[in-house]
Length: 360
Ligand SMILES: NC(=O)c1ccc[n+]([C@@H]2O[C@H](COP(=O)([O-])OP(=O)(O)OC[C@H]3O[C@@H](n4cnc5c(N)ncnc54)[C@H](O)[C@@H]3O)[C@@H](O)[C@H]2O)c1
Image (cartoon, rainbow, N blue to C red; front, side, top):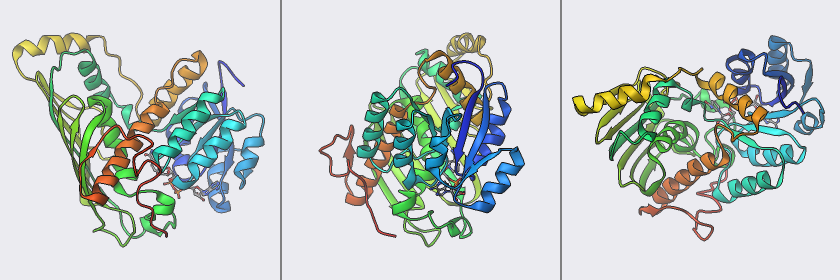
């Protein structure tokens, strides 16, 4: 196992896994080398392995774990496989990177967190949208305390998904995708929101399946009260002809507006609008020393390498993924019961072990 220098990576799943290479690992040749690839689809495996010159190819996840050279296992398989694959990779003494959603319930993610505590290796959940300069500057201003009282935020995830997207059998089914637009798509923007505003205290949600003939939801709205007292409105759909992801956060001394880029909402430019001329100077002071970061997968993996080498906390932790899972649990429970849900959600909550599970 490398402490400094180049860490060897084995990737399972060649869909977004290919993007992890192209937009992430390949941009850090001094930090990572993808040495092995795993996919049950032989054609896809060969195409991606050939494209990046990866010699070790396998259809069996267990074989990936048996490769001594592999320091990091990056899990990019369909959602229902993540928990078992993370636990197996930790047991095989591998560092783990895993795509969202990590788990389909709080009970499952608590099992993963317990396993991580017992093992020497750690799990990096993938929330690459946090690595954007607009998002990072807003966080810096908020964390410095100068934004003041958070009033209200709106979060929109308006994407477009067609029947071709759902031709992939695991998509659109509770058993395999584990959720719909709330869990698979809007999870990113919701993570940005909680990263900036902290955890929710109460949620009320409605969900519907209106865009595609699928089992999981593809439209959702929700009304949240955060622990800070701030109000938040979430809206998510997969039926928008123009795709946008947008956050708007109104604080006492400043309002933030993200750009609308659907798959990079954390990127610059964000509008930072001071409430008064007096608020301008402290904001300028806080941003004076700001050094732009690499964005999305490149930024996430660069920060990951630094944490691996130094043993410092990972840039995204299972606690972050747990908060996303807890919000999803609350939203689904509220939508199913028609009642508001109070957080935190403990093991005695009826949805702790999972939200609605419909076969298919
Ligand atoms: N962070 C992001 O922006 C982002 C974007 C897209 C997808 N994702 C997530 O990544 C995961 C994969 O999504 P995708 O769009 O790449 O799906 P995909 O279906 O395009 O790719 C998944 C791949 O995994 C392979 N696979 C299935 N079972 C396997 C197994 N047991 N062992 C090895 N390979 C196996 C499939 O053959 C397929 O090639 C999902 O959890 C999804 O939510 C994240």
